[in-house]
Structures are given as C-alpha cells and as structure tokens.
Length: 454
Image 1 (tube, rainbow, N blue to C red):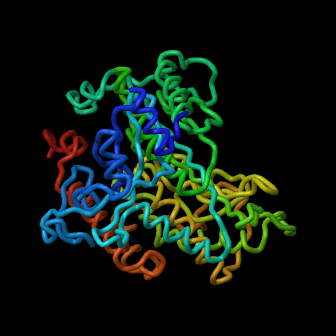
Image 2: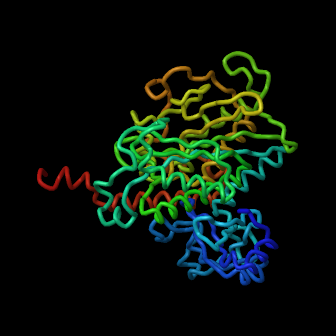
Image 3: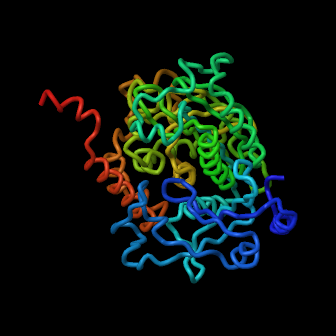
C-alpha cells in the first residue's frame, strides 16, 4: 500500500500510521527540494491550493547558490515564492521514513501559469507534443551507483580520499563477492518495491563497489518521478546503514556510473509504433522509428548538455571509459550512444549518453525532442554501425567537455527551437555557473603536479 489516494491518506493519518507529508519539486539537478507538513494541513490547505516555496529553488547550482543569468532572477524577484502544486498521482509512503508520505509537485506562478523552466514542465511540453500526434512515451532508466564503507560524514571529513569500496574487485554479473554490500543493496531493493517501484533486475557492476538496480518501464513522467525518488531514498537508506553511495558519473579512473535511458512510443490505444516490416540491416523498424533514431543522431551535438550537465559528466564520456564518445547507432551495439534493442512490441532505443548525474526529466525530454525533430523532418537513417564505434575515427565525436556542449547548445538554434528561449537560456546559465565554480577551484591534481615541482 505504497501509493495513496488523498482519502486513504486521511484514513492512515487517523489511524496514526502517517504523520507527515513531504511536498517536493525536482530542481535543476533532479534533486527533490521541499517541505514537511502535517497531514491535516496538507489535506485541508496544500492539496487544494498548493504551497509557497522560494523561486530560487529552480535557479540555483549544486551548492544552492543563485545569481543573474537565469530565466528566474531570484534577487530581482526579491526571493519571492512560486506555488508547489501537488500531483496527487505521485503520493506514496516512504518505507525508509516511517510515518511519512511524499508527493511530487509542479511549480506554478501565483496566477496559475506553469513555471516553464521547471524540469517536470520541460518534459511535459515534449509529452504534449507527442500527444498531438496521438503518441505516448514509455521510458525506463538504468541507474548505477558506487557503495563505500563508512558514512557520508566520514567521506566528507576525509575529503573523499582513501575510501573503501563495497567490494574489492570487479563483480560485473558475479554471484560472488557481493556479501559486504549486500545488506544495504538488499534493503534498497526491498524498500523501493515497497514504495511502488517494480524491480526487474539487480546485479553487481564493473567498478569495485558498483551496483545497478533496474526497475520496470512506465509512462515517461512516472518513470522520471520514480527515478528521483529512487536516488533520494537510496541515499537515505545508505545513510541509515552507515555507508555512503554516489551516483556521480566518474568518481575516479575506474568505470563510471551511467544512466541509460530506454524509450519507446505507443499509440494512444497502447499499440506499439516502433515495430514495422522493414528490410535489410534495420529489419523490423517502422518508418517512424527510423526517423526517430535519425533525429537522435542529428540532434546529439546540440542537445548533449541536457543529458550531461556537469563538468564531471564528461570525465565519463572519455576514450577508454566504455561510455559513448561518438555519434552513431547500432543494433545491440553497446559502443554506440544509440543502441536499438528488442523486437516487436519491445523494440526500443537505449540512449547511453546520460550518466548518474543526469536530470531524468531533461534527458528524457531531449530524447523525445530529438526524435520528434527526426519525424517532423523525415530524416533518413544511415545504416547501423556494426563495429567498435568507440575506436572508429570516422565516427563523429560528441562534445568532449561541458564548455563545448554549452557552446553547441547556445550557438545552434535547436535547443531554443524545441524547448523555447527561456528554457534554453536558463539551462545555459546553469552550465555557466557550473563552469565558473570549477574554473575557480584548485584541484588535487594541480597540487600534486605543482606544489613542489613548479
């Protein structure tokens, strides 16, 4: 009984089983920000009228610093409020927070107009474009994370140096060597299921201490809501278990944390539209699907920023890191950023560019926007890449740094065209804030290289 109606919430509160409701909005980084409130206050006031929250929540960097350049200028707005309007379909119990329910909210202005730069709104706009064509997007996200022995506070005080991983070696697909981190990952698996997520698979991954849990696909917005819930809950569970975990794309020189996005389209009646009676190397792909994949290839250079929003994102997207570096598609080819897998009703694309830091709403919105670009322009699909796209010098390259991705985003017209000027400018400002913070920092690499020898 994880997902609740408002009526059931009132009953659970009357029985003393639920005491508080967290009203949360996904921020620019895909983190949940919000407030706790009593159940009576939520049901009598907030469920109907919403809850005021400071506008800077959607115009701040990882450190919650805000400034000019965003579409929302918190200083000029006097740090006033917008309204968090709960989405009743997202209300659920939190197994890792007894007596607590959480509901995801949309940000709207006091007059009722949506906050266009809010991540959920960015995705909704693309889903509405699909709906105009009688289409619905189904999506699944595959998140990897690293588990470390010792608490988050221990890691902080050690400045993240010398941390012990949850396993001692590569446990990719292994059924052995997982015992040291099994208590925490078992609890994560179990409590996510109790929170209403449907688990499909779970296994160790390549980097020592790395793990992946895959949950069943759903309607795209629901998948993204579950994605941010999963990240929030996994961190809380790790903290309670006295360990630490990270979703950052590249913690060290080892294997990075990915967030592969699987996506397919259905008709309004639920019928699959990606499958068709094709011929040749792409046999089984409908014409619409071919255009959709072609759109991914055409748009990737300008839309990479929506999938890789941080400096660290591009440490993962490096040669030799078993993550995409080029722009190509292939049938069941993991060296390509666009991997076409499945057949018939399960035919779908897997987008392999996003890492564990990706904001799922923006990443999925970018996949849909690129696909619609391909459909609307009837882009032809080149043949699939059959070899190692990571090593093939003829394959066009992805942006190699956040700076390059930002330049492509701003100099091209695609981001503004598909997302609107305000959204394109807002997320460009977020990238500039990330770059400015990084460029002003002195790294350990610089100290080791230059302290004594320069």
